[in-house]
Amino acid sequence: MGVFSVPVTMRNLLNEYLPEPERGEEVKCEAVVDSGAAELALPAELVERLKLRPLDRVRVYPADGGQHEYRVCGFVELEVQGRRCQVRAIELPRGAETLLGAVPLEIMDWHIASQQKALVPNPKSPDTPLLPLC
Image (cartoon, rainbow, N blue to C red; front, side):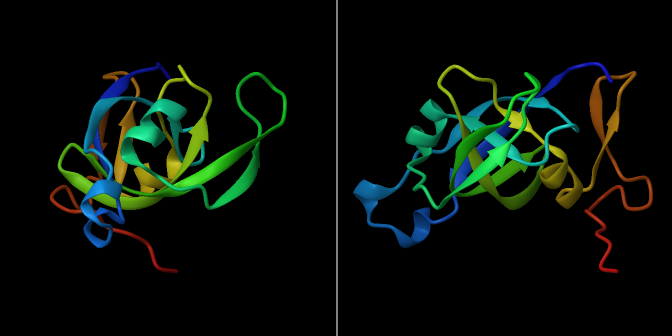
């Protein structure tokens, strides 16, 4: 699959429940579409702007082949090309690229058109996500 990026918009899912000074920014950035990644992964500087709070730790194996322990830092409302989902965010080191992994892609029902380097809607339901429940 060719590597490509898409614009995303993110906000801290808890913003509406937090006092004004504790609310994070709405963040717009480019995210690398990476079906080999499981989840949404954000560099530490975006975690700070969103004001996400650490929840847990998770062991991961990134492309470098090693194993690392990263923080799970709260839940994000994520919007990609007009579709939204709520997913947890894994914190990457500063300067890393934002990765859009398989879980949020599946929840939003985006398919990867690798030749066009684009996300396309599920042909069975082009207007809205269609999720399996069984």
